[in-house]
Amino acid sequence: SQKIEQNSEALNIQEGKTATLTCNYTNYSPAYLQWYRQDPGRGPVFLLLIRENEKEKRKERLKVTFDTTLKQSLFHITASQPADSATYLCALGGGFKTIFGAGTRLFVKA
Amino acid sequence: ETGVTQTPRHLVMGMTNKKSLKCEQHLGHNAMYWYKQSAKKPLELMFVYSLEERVENNSVPSRFSPECPNSSHLFLHLHTLQPEDSALYLCASSQDVLADPYEQYFGPGTRLTVT
Image 1 (cartoon, chains in turn purple, red):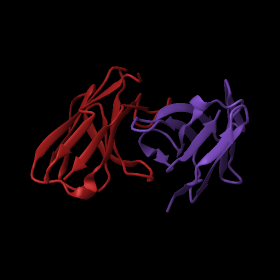
Image 2 (cartoon, rainbow over the protein chains, first blue to last red):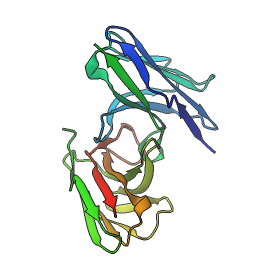
Image 3 (spheres, rainbow over the protein chains, first blue to last red):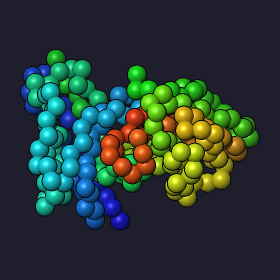
Image 4 (cartoon, rainbow over the protein chains, first blue to last red):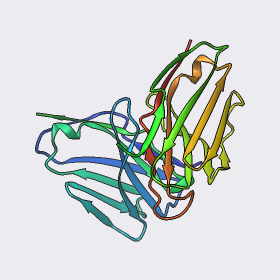
């Protein structure tokens, strides 16, 4: 069956550093991969979508890579800020075929 | 504010009660979704509607009953729930069920506690 793995342990980093979150998947070849941010008790918020023919995508301080050979996506936040503290969800596919990972909790310390 | 609203935000109900969750989207989208999110687990897709027609029903127990009267409104009717149904219930919408743009817009969720 399709499986998405995100680091279940929280990631703690210092303000100003680059945070890197990993999403690995198996038994699936998605044409799209999405990243969402979720704050406690709130719904996820869409951040970025990257297509299988795109190696990298950027939006402000965010950068996403998509390696279909390794079946892995990396999500980077540069110059991280305490306000970036949240859970980040990786999602494969799109529309009603979207499959979500459990997310990685990020803490950015001032 | 994502353009998707949900009410109530919190709900406590007994196992014999009947209640309904409401979702409204103001984005002009054609697709609407119900998800269940339990602690430290991935979102579980429950139901999908496209222009008021149910597209997907992922083996959800019959104690959960969806209703989509129009493309802007979605309800989830609850009856005789179990304690393990306690979770965050999220409503989402997207432009279409399987067409670009693929991203979904989520409401704030209803925190449901079954006692």
